[in-house]
Length: 89
Length: 158
Image 1: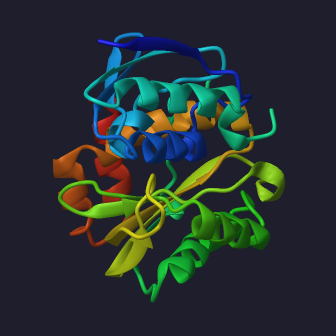
Image 2 (image 1 turned 60 degrees about the horizontal axis):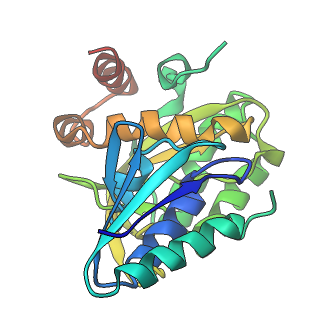
Image 3 (image 1 turned 30 degrees about the horizontal axis):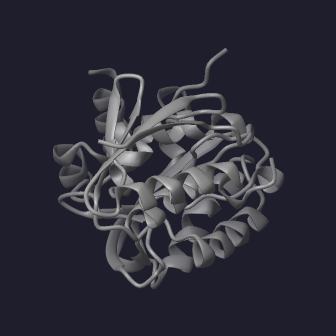
C-alpha cells in the first residue's frame, strides 16, 4: 500500500482551514486514504476525523492510500503540504 | 501555562435560545457575548462571517450538526470560546466541501484564538466535546447557560 510522510511546515499546523483543504483534496479521489499522527488515526475524507489529529507545526503525519488512484491522491496531498496549504508561512 | 478549553468555559459565553435567522446572524449574535466581556471586537464577528463564506465550518456531528466559525486574531483581544444553541436551526455549508453541502446547524461554537499556534490544540479539544453524542443531544434541550456550563465542564473532566 503506497505511503508517504508529510512534515507539517505551515506556522499554524493543520488547523481548520488546512484540514478542510486536506479533506477536500482527499475527496477528489476514489481510493481509501488514512492519516496517522502519533497514535491518532483518521479517515482523510472525514473532516470530523481530520480535526482530531491535532497536527501542529513540525508534526510528521503518515498518509496511506489504497485503491486505483492511490498514487495520484498521495501526490496531490504532498503538493498541498508543499504549498503550505495555500497559506503564507 | 497551557490554556485548555476547560479554562475558557464561562457562563456568560454560553447562550441558549439564540434567535438567529441565518448563519451570519448566528455568528454575530454569539460574538456579541464575547464583545460584551471584552474578549473580541465587533469586527471579529464580521471577520468570521467573511471566513465562513470562503471556508465554511459546518460539521456533520450527531445527533445534531454544529458549526465552529472562527477568524484570524487581529480583532481578538483575549482567547475565548462562545457557545450558542440556536432557537431554530440555520443552514451552514459543510467544512471540507466546496460549499455545496448544507447542514441544519443547531449550535455554534465560536472560537476566538489570540495565539494562532494554539488553534490546532483548541480545535482538538473542542472535537472531544462536539463528538460526544449524548452531550450534543442534551445541549439542545437545556434551558439555561448555567446548565450548559456544568454539562460541558463535566464532559471535559470525565
